Amino acid sequence: MDSISANNSLIHFNAICYKALNEHLEKHNFSKIFILVDENTHQHCLPVFLEKLKTDLAFEIIEIESGEINKTIETCVGVWNALSDLDADRKSLMINIGGGVITDLGGFVACTFKRGIAYVNVPTTLLSMVDASVGGKTGVDLGALKNQIGVISDPDLVLIDTQFLDSLPQNQMRSGLAEMLKHGLITGTDYWNKFLDLSKLSMEDLDTLIYESVLIKRNVVQEDPYENGLRKTLNFGHTLGHAIESYFLSNPKKETLLHGEAIVVGMILACYISSRLTGFSKEDTNYIKQLFINYYGKVSIDKTEYAPIMDLLKYDKKNNHGNINFVLLEAIGKTKIDCQVDDAIIEEAFDYYML
Ligand SMILES: NC(=O)c1ccc[n+]([C@@H]2O[C@H](COP(=O)([O-])OP(=O)(O)OC[C@H]3O[C@@H](n4cnc5c(N)ncnc54)[C@H](O)[C@@H]3O)[C@@H](O)[C@H]2O)c1
Ligand SMILES: [Zn+2]
Image 1 (tube, rainbow, N blue to C red):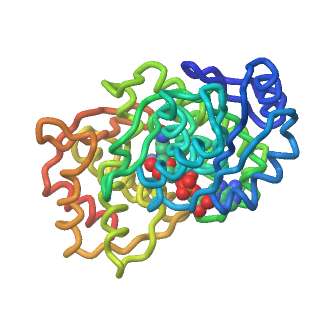
Image 2 (tube, rainbow, N blue to C red):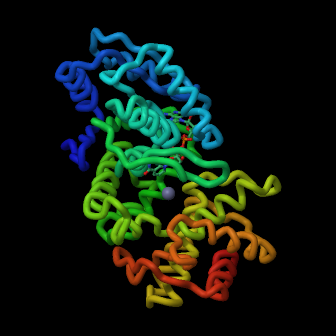
């Protein structure tokens, strides 16, 4: 698998990762290495990583608690203090080993510490490999508002070693798969068709699909880094998906829904809305609904919950001038951005999902 360049980063895959990292360490005159992990990646990923790291440089491990709830400025303060106490200087290198929480927070800490030190991301969840690791967005949450504080800054290297997925829980795998399905729906039939029968996929096939997903995201963000147009298509399924995710999170009576699981529901709703507004084929809509429900099961959303979920749409980051903007499909691979949708059609979409 050839390495991929993305703005100021190089993305390497599997065996080449460690060779590239060790060469990078040799070439740059770093003073010390700081490795950021959470308790899960400390246990499952760090030993594998350290075995491959060949350097005489001293390194320190900084561990934070896992989970989105810890993606906060308070955690950053803890990591900034640890860096300071452990004598990090402007020539230090940070290596973030973990899912999107670690790479988002670690990237933000690195590019703000002493006005920015170099960092490397080692994504260890499927979601962070195909999504969070590409595009240079770093940051943390502000209370309940996701990713409100942050900067766009590229790591020197992104190292995607898919063997880390061996220890990843199944529900986290499915959550990451949702973003790949999204890449299929927004880019077109060649990639999309590869997901129609997951039972036939081998681990090598998965590696290739991860590679292709990274390429798709890289191409989109390269063309539109600041989300003026094309990059918005990556939000397909996310307008209602995020609202459903927040509603389930804040409602103790509802089951736990991972990001990708909520996005799958959001994508089914967006397909239905597309079939009503943009001429997206009804047949494709039904097919996608059935396929996604086969893979993910069905989440229960009662009629009385439509309104509180729709209320949450007003917090969507894609809104501007008070408008709620949807990404819809005209066909598989053909997106339409900045679409406004009447509440009545959103309610119909929920009814269609629950049918
Ligand atoms: N920067 C971006 O462009 C971008 C894009 C998408 C998502 N994100 C962010 O990514 C975050 C979600 O990332 P995520 O889904 O990776 O969640 P996560 O980082 O919370 O990881 C999920 C869980 O898996 C554990 N884990 C990680 N790797 C493991 C492994 N190999 N084996 C066993 N356990 C492992 C973690 O400790 C955690 O408990 C969100 O905060 C989201 O905002 C950022
Ligand atoms: Zn997403």
